[in-house]
Every structure is written in structure tokens, then in C-alpha cells.
Image (cartoon, rainbow, N blue to C red; front, side, top):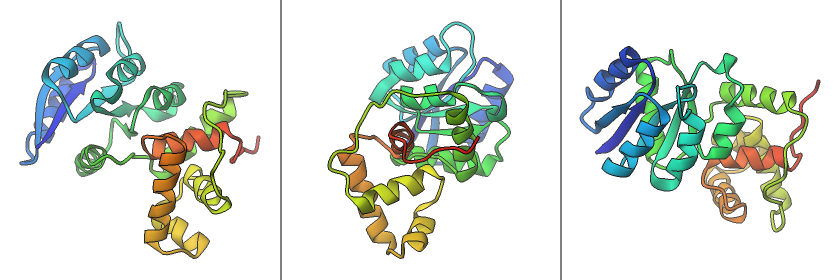
Length: 213
């Protein structure tokens, strides 16, 4: 059973998400939070596998709440992405993925299951928006180097940062799907990254991908 906390300052939206999630036999909603502090408290008190987290909330926002939750649960950010200037900060805080608030119901359910399974949710369209945010901000500090990363692993990391899926990377580099997964697993270990989202950050912070201005 996937245990979910829904955090959003709009009660109607929280309720809608709750009804949808609880319509599924493998998902249960532990509770709702109207701000980040309530979300952190719920996770600490009840435990959770996934938190659907709004970014902009009164009091403690979604970014700080994500940071405080840390490894206690995986955070799926809910955002109106085109208007959000906080995507990079949310990833740095430990978010595992992003969803637009008008996401189709089936996609929301899939996203919750993907994140609960320990994967990151960074669709190509979302990654392109993330690229725009990196372009907007002049520079980012490098938090992890690429020592020990092989040339092939660097190629894989670069393609991840460009928003390619595993099958697309396999075709691009003429590799099997299993080999791509092996390379990604090694990158996660070498870069001390929790998931694909953090690999994207590592690639940009180390200058593997640049954005034309």
C-alpha cells in the first residue's frame, strides 16, 4: 500500500486529489496539509511514502518542507510550472519529480506509483523547462565533481540532462536497455545521487549541458 500525504493550501484541490488517490486499491491518503509545516508534521507523525507537495504555500513553503522531510518520504512537487521560479531549488531540496496541477488523473496516479517505487519523475517537457531555469540563473555552485565517472557514463549523464528516456538513450548510444540501466546505476553510486533528478542537477552544475541564449 502506497501511503500519501497531500499538501496544498487550496482545500478544494486537496480534496480532489484525495478522492482520486483513494479510488485506487493500492493507495491510501494519510492526511492533508494546508502548508509546509503541517506536511512535515504529518510525515513525522504518520510516516508516508510519497508527499504531493505544492511549492507556494503560506508560512513554510514546499521547498523548505521538502528539505525538512529529507529521506523520510519522497516528494512529488505540484506546480504551475511555467510560472514557477523555484524548480531548481526544489530539486536541490530533494524533490523526486514534478507534476503540473492540471495533470490528467491517470498521469497523477502513475506518477505517485513511479515515485513510490524509488524512481524520479522528470519527463522531457519538464526537463526542458528546468533547462530554461538554469539558463536564467547565471551560475550554480558545483556540489559534486565527476571524478571516477567514465567517458561512456558521462555521455549517458549528458543525455539524461537533455531529457532523454532510457530507451531513447539506448538508441542514441547504440546500447541495450540493460546496459543503459547499469550505467545509470553506477552514476547514482559515483555521484552519491538519490535519483534521476539529482543526476540532472549534477550534469548542469558540472557544465555538461549548456543552454544557448
